[in-house]
Length: 67
Image 1: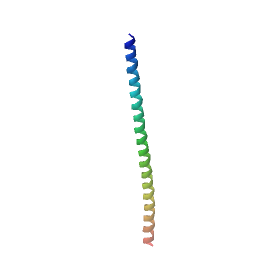
Image 2 (image 1 turned 45 degrees about the vertical axis):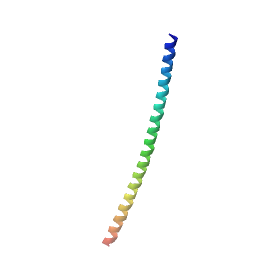
Image 3 (image 1 turned 120 degrees about the vertical axis):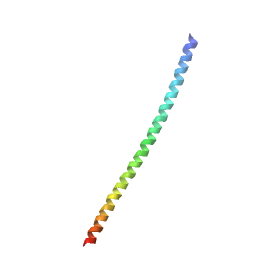
Image 4 (image 1 turned 180 degrees about the horizontal axis):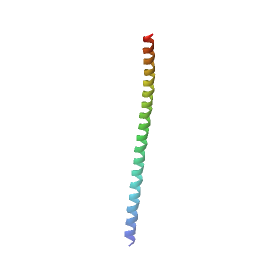
């Protein structure tokens, strides 16, 4: 019976280590994904700001052209 209990404890410990490693990998992947999305959102914000600036310049140009 003691051998059975020892083998069960060993199996449980291996399972725990595998689950901990899996969790670590998942957290790292989620972190990488989040950082990438933050960077992409920043670039989109910069793009939108530049579009608004160009639209303003275009309106100014069209207005001065009419005068």
